[in-house]
Length: 101
Image (cartoon, rainbow, N blue to C red; front, top):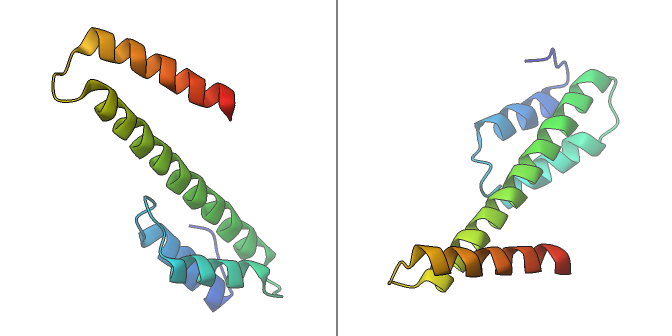
């Protein structure tokens, strides 16, 4: 852990590390944004917080993408579980989503 001298930045940093990054609470996002944007002499601590915050946001977004892909696969397969056909439809849908983005 980097040496962080600003207590507000340190608190936000530790709270981010302790949180589940699947879905960040709004209060934690607000706390991190406030600490990142404040005027402080602790530039190293602020930079460390920015990096952790960016990683947490990216992880949250990726988790959402995985859930969407899983739900799509479940919808395509249904209860029959026909893996071959389902996998082909899934790939077609997945690449179609990627191309349309």
